[in-house]
Image (tube, rainbow, N blue to C red; front, side):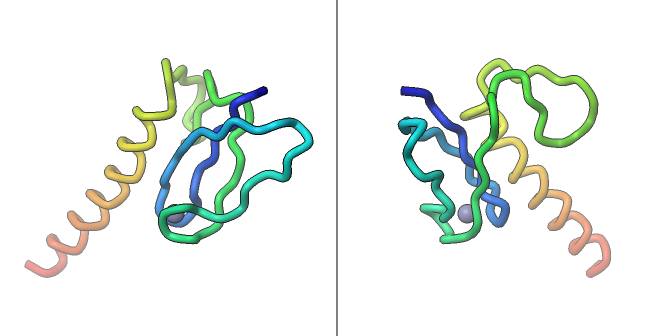
Length: 83
Ligand SMILES: [Zn+2]
């Protein structure tokens, strides 16, 4: 059975799910109940659209890196404007 990678559009939560081809794709984030999308052929695909970028194993790396970066930027901006 193929392993599919899902990514939440709301919280950025990323996880793998082993499914049959005939199974319906998941649509709800197990964390925040937000909308998730299936990431096709996870290996070697970049999620940020910044050219050619190879992730060794995108499951854990980008799951923690991408959302954290987002929040960091947000927090930084808020802190800057607050002070
Ligand atoms: Zn989510």
